[in-house]
Image (cartoon, rainbow, N blue to C red; front, side, top):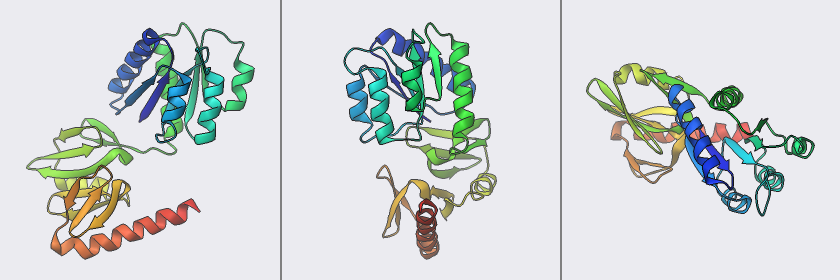
Length: 236
């Protein structure tokens, strides 16, 4: 789950970041938090980066939160936008920006937890979370999995987690989802995060190369291109 905080006050950024981090830890959910001290810097960032949730202060120097939210909506309609402000007078202006919620300062950790609970439920329509052992993972965050004796190493873009689970049990869980495939002995890749297949490697979106066994190569290539084709059709 990728979350942005746009606030020109560093103390507010730090407070909100700590509340989000605590909520994510309590719910065993991965959360990447990016902070921006101006509407201008955030507007530049969204030209190449997308977020699941954006917490947007309204009263900022330079480009204010309403203007910045309009830039966000030009770039992305699906991001959940949560305005944060010390005044209710901007609610009418905020409405056309399709805000998910409106949080009044000073807010509490409980208030932020509540809005994040609501946001997580809303994102559940688009983001699937899977329980593996005692941990939870967003399916689309998983790059690949390696077997390690009675454990499995689960690699995401930003973390590596060792979970006590057999490879057989984990592969049974993951292969219920069409983007996951066993490509070699003790190796599962997520086609969602596979850039292409080069030679006998799956090249992941972060540039890593995951070897495909010779026995599975033809089957993997066919499954990957079938998956890409079906994904393309679903977007039409």
